[in-house]
Image 1 (cartoon, rainbow, N blue to C red):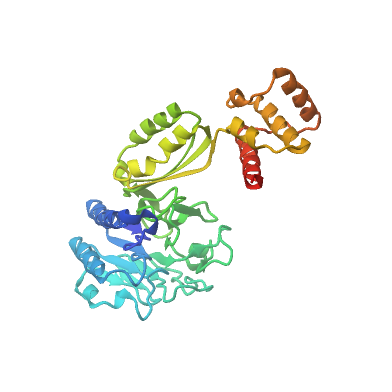
Image 2 (cartoon, one colour; image 1 turned 45 degrees about the vertical axis):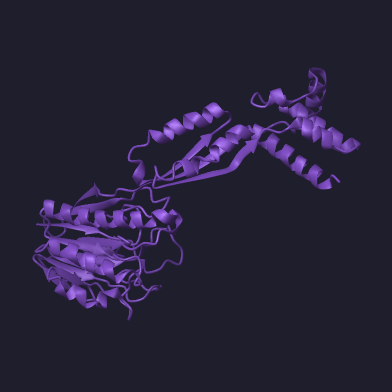
Amino acid sequence: MVKFLHTADWHLGLKYKQLGDKAQHARDIRLKTAQKILTTARDNDVDFILIAGDLLDSNQVDRKLVGEVSQLFQQVSPIPVYLLPGNHDPLTRDSLYHDPVWESVDNLTIFQENKPVVTGNCTLYPCPVIQKQSREDPTEWINTPEESNQLNIGVAHGNLQVGFIEEANFPIPPDRTQISGLDYLALGEWHSLFQHHDREGINRTVYPGTPETTKFGEDDSGKIVLVEIKSANDTPLITPLDVGNLSWLKLEKKINTLADARYLESELESIPEPENQVIYLQLSGVTDQETISYLSQLEDHYHDYFLKLQVSRDELYLKPNLLELKALIPEGAVVNQTFEALTALMKTQPEIQDHADISSLRTQEIFNQLRDQDLVEGLSPEILNRAFLLMYQMIKEASP
């Protein structure tokens, strides 16, 4: 019987350029999460801890951070900590794993070669990364004894070849556990939790994901896994545990009135733990200048409320000023007919029909002509406003 904690991709020292002046706060949170992981390991009375690569975001992080991490590892002594260099912190000449500070951590083993390591009733088969890129399978060397009472556990950092990535960096065959006789393959590199079923339908190959989400799209991150294996060839019991604090949230909101904008604010203020929230807010709709001005202040207003709020207004359109546009239209049948057709089409859209200054009779006449030409299907306020904006821009550019 063995019980261990499997984690990877801590990326301590991550620059977080997208967070601007909040980057250091986010780095501090990652370090606190590292402390939480080690505390979780101790609370669960694990036999050892496996870190499957990318503990550090690079070999250029502040050396002070290396000292802080080494102290964290010492705090869980005598629990053994096994650390694998990954592609972000490879065991190259400039590797921070050559720093003598690690030598003072008596419960830490940094894997430096493809060589079995025995710990209790387990044999670990580590695959340390010694360069940033390779098309070679790092696990190819693993060959366990055919008859053994030991539990065999592989530790690697790379990309499982299950169809997600072409020309992958450090490719790993999906049936490595069966090829090499492993009871478990602890992987790092992917930032979301992923468990791979072998040919027997058993999960023996696992990515725990990054314990602290690094960007949008890492939907099943913020976890570690607790692994229990009773005996050789037995099915591992895998328990994902939530440890992350940061939340990366994408929101899409349609805004047409100032009331919509104010309701959006109430929704934002109902989000729990705002200091740990990174939010990308995509706004769309057709509205007036007052509402657009109101929304343009959101990022500054919530700068100290959320860890980060980024607002995109690319799909938010200003209601067309038809009187101004009409006054600019030069003489000419084509331009006037186009303007009249757009105005008539606005009558078909409840959200903007009040802005269409054209008689109902003329509207119906034009509408019937356009419908006969299949030009009405798929129209929306956004499309019509975009057409007006383009027309307005062209007329403005042509005006003296």
